[in-house]
Image (cartoon, rainbow, N blue to C red):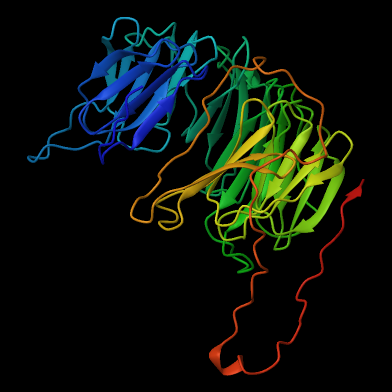
Length: 439
């Protein structure tokens, strides 16, 4: 694999199985076969800013910023779908917004869907010249296809208007006709946008509904609520015991539990079952994210972004704390597909100084650290993906794996205004943390 060191390499993507890699260098989009170490295709698309492979590696989707002509006439189609066997362009679409630019495929590629003028258009078997089905609702703002095998389900979100509530509905493809065709329905107020999360077995969806502004003035982040919909028809509001923002929600890979991180700092984290009853409360702490390892059984609670990078690694089979490493200034976290290793990184443009990455074992050891020279920036880091089942699950370890010897960082000093620096430091405790407990 040759190094492409141009300054315009900003769009990169792996295929789902990790066998193909694509990047745009500001001149061409190149597709490389990682396993055979050969260049497969080169497409003349210099302004590409987004890339995505279809699940079975049959299609490469590319997106360029939409631009109208100088005389005001409509621009050329900017979303291209390329056949990776022949290298030919299957279809071009006009896709003005970068948000949700990429079509969504079912895992076997039997169905592909995209949102067009508030309708969901479905194509079958990668035939993009014929719309096989349409989902008509008042104004579909967003949709998510279910993971896994057929039959494919689709979750759709319609925002409220003129006093009517917003709602999310679940359908099974292609049964879209009539009001009784929905598998489940959940209506709610206070929603400017939603995030919809299917579990791995496609039996339920979690919906985080957010408003841009909290009218009570209690939160800078707006207001969030968490809703649950099952494909069997049940729905519920997940009752969160602490007021404040919902920072993150993650399904366990076992599909029968999920973790929510929520509440004014120090934030609470709780595991819930499919009845939306709390199972275990991790107490409070400086955290805003939750990451299950690919095999389940281990959960990392972390505080990144405007927090100091503290992580808690939990065995969620026995609810025992494994380690508490600290990855300061991290802007990115990802589990390795082997379920043993973690990468944390500090990337631009979120932070333009101190860029670099660290490879950890989940027991808290740093196995490798790379720092980018001060005059350079690092934009992106990610693991090569592998399909489920490639790496067998290993027993949970508690003893730290051997890692690189590193000097222990000194305790961080609190900021003190110049006028107070000649006085003795006063100790103060602003908040008390709650301990973890089983429910």
